[in-house]
Image (cartoon, rainbow, N blue to C red; front, side, top):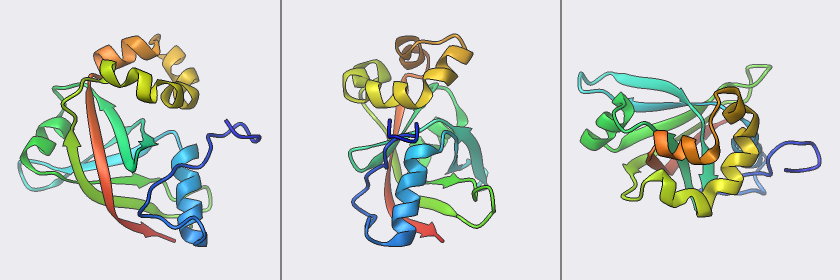
Amino acid sequence: MGETGLMPAASLSLLDPTNEVHARALARLGEERIAWFTTIGRDGFPHAVPVWFIVHDDSVLVLSEPATAKVRNLRASDHALVHLEAGTDGEHLTVLQGRATISDRPATEWIDEIGAIYEAKYRGGLAGISLTLETMAAKYSSVIQLRPEKLIAW
């Protein structure tokens, strides 16, 4: 965690950290704890749910229970987006649009790779729902990888 107690800025090659809007989006992706994850439902309508997420290796990662609508939707269409709230003043929109896949590796196999980042960001949240990193990965075993193709931000 950085000096402010917040997560260090995320990293996505799509974003240019020298661009003020991109830098703010990167910082928010590292700091924000909740994002809205949107998929396309079978009925053709958007399906949006709040999720915990991290940025890792040029992807936004979301751990999910395998039988959720978002996982089902992604098996039919890989179009998805991650949307952060607009900030306390309503003026800092951050939306990443891209293609998402379900990893062939269960979350328990990702622990060595992402565990420290995930635990640093959600330690308090995990304790609040009586889960450890290991029990979280076992229950939320599907790892969704969104590879952003477009940033919508200001």
